[in-house]
Amino acid sequence: MAKANNLMMNGSGSASGGLYNKVKIMGEGTITDDFECALFKTYGSSEVSGNAKAEVFEIFGETEVKKNLDARNMKVLGTLSIGESAKIENTKILGTVEVAGRFTGDKVDLKGSIIVKGDLEAEEFVSSGLFEVSGLLNADVIDVKLRYSTSHVQEMGGETIRVQKKGAFLPFMKNEGYLEAKTIEGDDIFLENTTADVVRGKFVRIGSGCEIGLVEYYEEFKALSGSSVKEHRKID
Image (cartoon, rainbow, N blue to C red; front, side, top):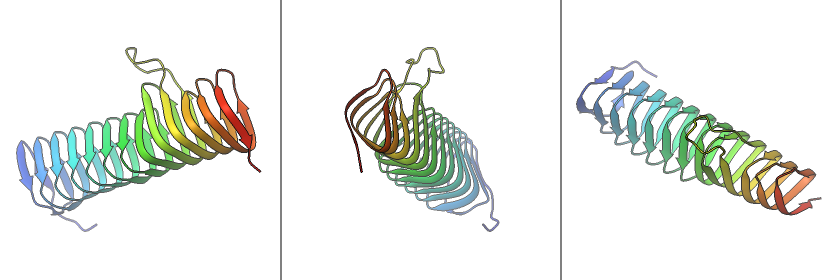
């Protein structure tokens, strides 16, 4: 992107949209229109009234983007709210993200929590946190470690899907996490602590803590000790 001025906000203030190099907010700041920058960083509280586009988007405080967010690399250690949709190549979440529309990207590394009201699509989704997807969670690789509470997804689809239980990393948290889904579909599937109406895949293994209504499989199916599968059938 073309070189532009830096925008620094300390205390309380507002600025118009446009093209910037670096945007840093260390108090309360508002950007009143669409903007594009190389680096956006908030340590306090910020609001973007329009669309935001950045090479690097880092949140250490609280930020609300009223419309769409487009970024190459995003890191959230605080709270981020997106009013429409998000397109992020590489995402790392240690805090909380809420997206009113769709979320698309290459890699999502989730250690905090994310709520997506639409679909979440990525090449790789790796989670040891908490997620709620009202539509489809779709990724080539889905690797979920269930540490605490219950994650929810309407539909989950991918080539390789691993959902495994792990002990909570803080002593006051619940010892195990759970996943609830309507439908899970993939090529190679292994599930633990999962409740689903339908699981469909080439190779399906259902591990302990699972309650599955129907498993449909093309090649191989195994129900391990401690699992419950009401019905299973091979698809020709």
